[in-house]
Amino acid sequence: SFPLAIMFRRICGGVAGLASSEQVAMQELLDSRLELLTDEGGIVDVKSDAGYTSCTNFLTKIDEASRAMSVEIASRTYRLKFSANYRALFPDNNRHYRVDVLEASVDQQEIWVNGEKFELSLEAIQRAQLLQNSWVSLILLLDRWQAAEVALAAGRPPSAATRPEKSELVSSLYAFDVAWASFENQYISELIAIEEQARELVVRAVHLEEELQACEMSAKPPSSDVERQFVLFIAQLNAVANFKRKGRDDLGSDILDSAREELRLPPSSANTRSREAA
Image (cartoon, rainbow, N blue to C red; front, side):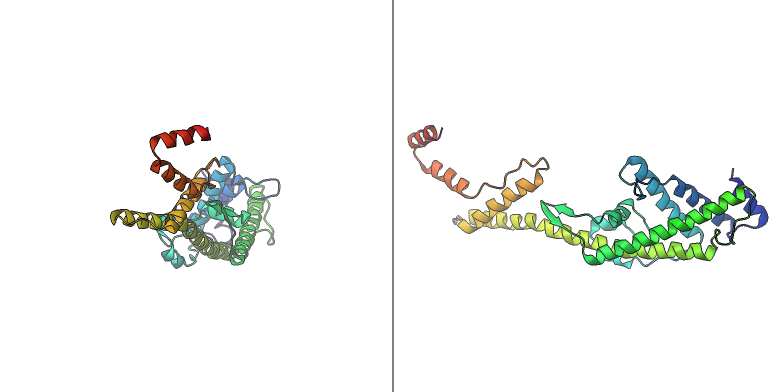
């Protein structure tokens, strides 16, 4: 069954020139707008499970309404440059609105990777603000549309100032999509760059380990500098990989040198030194 307002519009030829399928998509979008949860500051809630779910549904209905009204999709060709992990999240040129992208445009928070702080660029922050502006504009337009729905349901004709035209809705949906694609491009590209930089720690440790293996295979003593760097990188990996912050990065190559010295000592001398250390 359809709400009374939709039935009324079908009899009278629709509001703002919407076709039947467009009216249904629009009503679902309005319903999802009413279900959006916000915090005390009026910011959409994506932290709670209920808030995240309602925001996901709202973004889905934006996409469905846009498709129902044949709103042009902003170019997503930039996704071809995404890494494999992100191409899995954004597999084609469709909208694929995601709550975490919207959340990033609101928070613009610091990003911590391997114990190192990264910040979004000024360009990303500016694009985030443009996305937020278009988000607010779309919400306000939907609220105007909802006011028209209430007026119709009460048997009152909505004022011209209250009732948006279809062209205004299409324009707002397209502007939102353009702003979304612009921020998504910059934000995901910066995330990829941050992740690549963070992986350098592992990559460098692997290269040093390969150098040490080559020395072992050739029976040549490894460079003390290579060993020292390798121990340093392992200590850093140990520290950043332990999410409980119990990893240590203060153990240097002197620990390795001391162990070798112990191994070179006669058993009796090694036992004596062990007792003295105790």
